[in-house]
Length: 452
Image 1 (cartoon, helix red, strand yellow):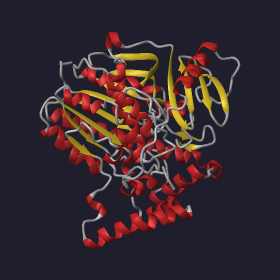
Image 2 (cartoon, one colour):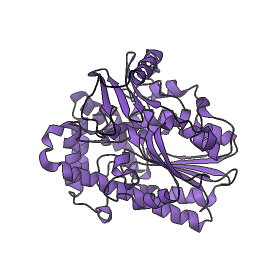
Image 3 (cartoon, helix red, strand yellow):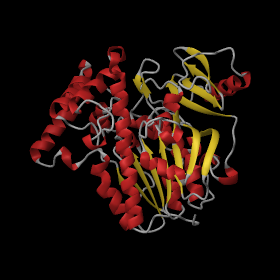
């Protein structure tokens, strides 16, 4: 690895580790990632900072747990919570890197303050397809200022928007193929050294991969979107359709894996085949294991907290066991970049800096000084949910965490979580909600099921 390599961070939304063959899945959902892992560095038990995109990336890009709650998706709350934090993009820019970001997740958009520190920032929240004509602009203004607020007050915005998407076969997000030109332009034109972050939303529900990636049987566009809507709001009605839903999820992972293959071809063509590559996910998804689908519950089961973390061209290969946290991801990127800076004094996950911890903590603030949180050890996990209390699971014998063994767990692990919760009590930050930016992102967030 060179001292200042060009570096790529590829983030997959909502991909859980146990649906990848790199982590023991019987299906080959991501064949290209498997080939990357064969010559790279694989973390067996990477745990997210928190469940949910904005909570997880706050931890990964600042090195500290989020001080806002994902129960609020107000941009002002998150801007206030991160206002005084150092972002990875800012640190890389000061280290002399040309920085670029391409994605389409509204929660990581400029409206939430995530455009700080980037030389190139494409969040695709407002796209050309939204319409440039006077009539299109008029309709978009009416939709944002009158129609959507009215539907939301009536409690039917989600149903109406998803119904429209199903009827018109309108995608709920910007697929990676529509972002490819921006990715390619950056790789071809950026001055060295450069850092590029790409977040793919394709693997976020609703899951409906293009036909050429449907390795396993699933419904077409309308059927897939209809059942994605039902499964998240009325999981008890999915009945025997769970296998088909799982098929759709796995097919979307194959779709995202195709991006890696195309990206690698671009790197080779441009002489960047020695660039450092880091692939991870921001959180997983429930697929009915605990009676729910998706990740809105923010429960702390491994189905939501354990994610892939695979690296290549980072000066190290092999497989790393034991729990590790993506709170260290930003510092790891800085280490790869040859910078001595570390975000929030977190260590790198590479070389001698890597700490073999006995446990790591996953946390989602729940508002009013409470939290959903877990202390994850190599064998045991201790969970606290405000609505259900304390739980413990023995992970080796119960990977899906269905048998609550509270009382048999190690007291030391419980003490770790109780101490963490005491230290974090009452830290939730809120901001002034007067910037009006929600009108620009609320339809995207409704499409992805964040709001109704």
